[in-house]
Length: 169
Image 1 (cartoon, one colour):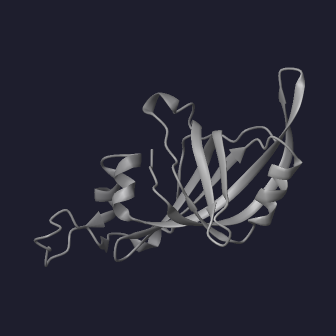
Image 2 (tube, rainbow, N blue to C red):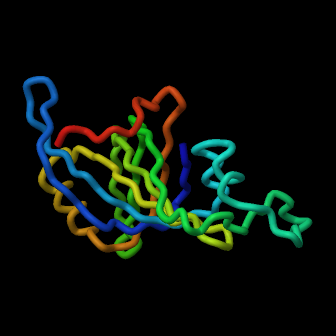
């Protein structure tokens, strides 16, 4: 799974819904975040994914011999990656206020990416979080359409819980 250290993201969309946890109904926020990463991030999804989409540069850089900036098939467009990762730690740092929102039991799924010539991949994903109270919910809503950073987003191989099938909503 992809790991981040204060990587710039944009919170694009928020969907609110209720989930049943045992006998309790719990507010769930589905957050769609977008971010750009170098194509080496594809190696964290699968060790062969990047090399199936990109070729090495003819004038390979001696400092970066693993550089693969040339997109093989730009006609592929946006690709989807099936997988659901849970639990993940989602930390959103508000660049304007220095505030931080931390969700230790988030779920990540619906990963899609657009591989671009030059070696950049534009990602979007859904992160599901459960705010503790109305104040925390309001803080998330205030971040809509703002840039922030992901502090850490990680999951172990054992956390892969399915093939990316959508949750019932």
